[in-house]
Image (cartoon, rainbow, N blue to C red; front, top):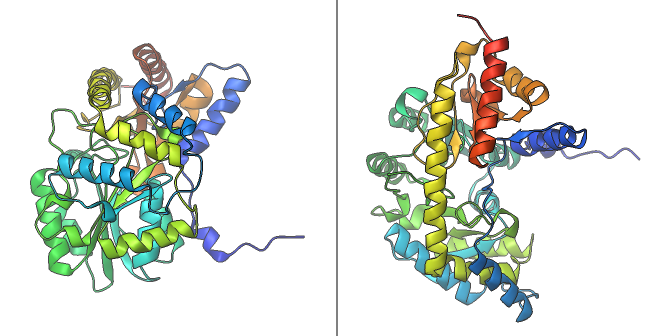
Length: 395
């Protein structure tokens, strides 16, 4: 039998990091040493107190179904944490727990966006934005993030994209892949635009605790925005819990009910023991100390990587203000981004991503995740430098 796939599958993308990781693992299986700078996953272990909370939850019987939106005590812990961090009042009924924060975006799109509606999003940006918007039949409208402005959103360009069909703006700060952040004034202006044109905002703040000397600002904290903002967040990045698969939405109550309904029809619920571990992650001083330590280490690595990249002929790199990614411009090396990423993997043994894996505005850039040890980062930088200076444009 030949399976006839639905047309919508042609509109669904993938994620380049996982594709490159698979190729890198294949090369490793063949005996090649690979430096992994492709995957956005902290190399830290989940803090011990969180692991112990998860084990305790398993032993206490949290191995069964939970309510679709999450266990009441966990929703309360998330609400308290968000209220404290973002300086806005959140009720537990506005929290929905999901197995991975991508579900927050997908469920919000399914619940609020019709085919043909327009959704504004950053370019370059996290691939799931474009993929999911296309998948449901909506129209992506792209705001270019430019190197010369530190990859902040061009607010005049944002205004120019709004049409009678615009329904939503997707924000991401700190940003993947660039490490750029939106300032308080940027956020204020975006919120004014959303209010003026009656738009929803999905705010992806998964890296909000991973900032370097910068104060994170959320649209949720702005006047008039609570009833039109969906917070997209989770435990994967800040607590080194990528494999635990726990994300959360904070949404207006009537929308939260719809997100729960979509959970019932998809995953039923997030794992109970993972949810209980989240109380420990979000409430205990030990977890906060672990996050602060991680941020200090990432800041040191950031400086090491950016300095190392800027010392390579033909490469220049802005200093990221958040997340754990560097997004160097490689146009003057003589390579395009896809050829360079491919050859670095196959010839130099360094796995990176081409900037165009995140949109056309990533042309001329590559993305590196500084989520490996200092020794691995130095090895990767040495290999990149040797390859580029031996094979790239001379002079």
